[in-house]
Length: 594
Ligand SMILES: [Fe+2]
Image (cartoon, rainbow, N blue to C red):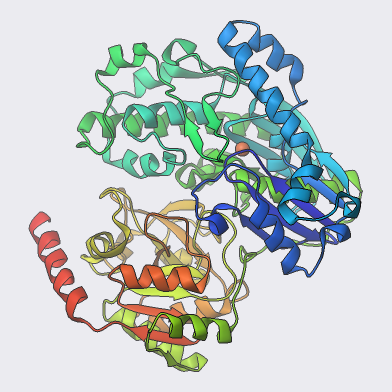
C-alpha cells in the first residue's frame, strides 16, 4: 500500500512516500528548489518521492496532509471575533483551506497528469497530531508519552498525548495565542534575529549571557494548570496565525512579535548585523532559561498522566537540543525519540504514518533508525559531473578512500564529504557534511573564514563513535540525529576544543556502524590515526539549503576554500596556495584574539 504524505502551504513544505508502513523516501522542497524553508506546494518533492519507488500517482492509494484547517475551528472563531484584524487573518486562513482542499488539482498540475488517474483517498490531520505521529510511529516503542510544541499549527502550540499501539489519545492542547515557540521568536526578533528559523542561532548565543533578566522574562510566560500562558501585553497583536505568513511565492515571512512594552523594559531592539551587546546575550540567556523551565514543567505534568520512561517528541521547539539534553536531569523520562525532521517538514511522515496505523489500523513493524531518506547518485553520474566541472579526481577503493580522507582531516584540512542518500531533516549527519579536525584551536575560525561565514558565537558539532560517547560526554543516551546537547567531560575538552562550546557542551551526533557504516569507518580511521574518536561535522553548504546533488556539492567546493572533496569514491584535492594563505591569516587572527 502506497501512501503519500504532504506538508504544504506551510513552512518547510515536504513530501514523503510510505510503502506498507515503511518510509521509503522523504525530502523537503527546499533541497530541490533551493529556496530555504520554502512554504508553497512541494511539487518537486512529490515527483522525487514517486520516482524513488518507481510509482505513478495512479498507484498511490492515500494522500495524507499534515494540516486540518477545520481543526479547533470554534477556538479560531472565538479568538478572531475579539478584533477586526484577527477576522482578516481568519479569512486568509479559510482561503488557504480552500487551496489545501484542492490537493487533487494541485497534484494534477504538478505532475501534468489527467485527473482521472487519481484514485487516492484524501486525509487531513491536525498539525500537532501529525508531529506526535511522526515521532511515535518512527520510534521502537509500543507505548510512550507524546509531546509536540512549536510556534503554531492549526491554532495550537502544544499538545500532550498518550500513545499506545495504533492509537494517539490527545490529553491536552495549549491554544493560541499562548505559544512557547512565539516567546522564543519574539525575543529572537528583539535581539536582531528575525528570519524564520533563527531560533537555533540564539540558542547558541544564550550561554554567553548572564542571569540579568531572568526575573523580567519569567513574567512573559507563566505555567498554569492547563499548561502555560503568555502575558500578551509584551506581544503585538498578531492575529490567529501568530505572525507567520506564507507569501503566494512560498516565501515564509515573520511579522514583528514584540510590543512597545518590551522596548520600554529593555531599550532599543538590536538591528540585524550590528554589534551584539551584553544585553542581547543576557536576554538570550534568560529566554533559554525560561523556555526550559516551562518545557520541563509541561513534561513533568505529562509524566504524571502518562507515567512512562519513554517520550516521543516533535515540533519545531523539539529542535532545541540544549533543552533536549537536560530532559534526563529534569524529568522522570529515561528515553527520548526525537524524529530527525522534528520541525514542520516532518509533518509529511507523520500524516502518512498516522493514516497507515491509526486510520487503516495496519500493524507497526518499522522503526526509523537513520535519517538517510533522500536522493542518491550513481558513481557514473558523479564522475560525469566531475568531468563537466573540469576537476581532476582520483578514484579510490573503500580502504584507500577512508585512509586518504582521515589523513587529510588529521593534517588540518577541510573536507567536503558527499556520500550515499541525503539526510532527512535539518542536520547533516555524515552524508552531506563538511568534516574537519575537532581538536585544532583554529578550526572554527578557518571554517568560518573559508566556507561557512557564520556568527562567531555559533558552535560546530561533533560526530562521535557511539562506543566512546560515555568517555567523552556526561550522558550516554544516544543522540543519533544531533538533537541533544551534553556536557563534555573536563578531561576531554582540550582534545575537542573546536567543538567545545563556551559552556563546555557539544551538540553531538552519536554514530553507530549499523546506521552509517561508511561514516562510522571514517571516524574509526581518524581515531586510529589521532586517538580521537570524534570528527567535527557541519552541513555541506554555504548560506543555502544543504547540497543535494553532486553538481551542488562541486559548485560549493569550487566557490569556497574547502581543501578536499570526497564524493562517492572520488577524491579531489585543491592545489594548496590560496587556502594555505587564508589558513595562516585565520590562525594569526585566532592567536591574537585568544
Ligand atoms: Fe509545527
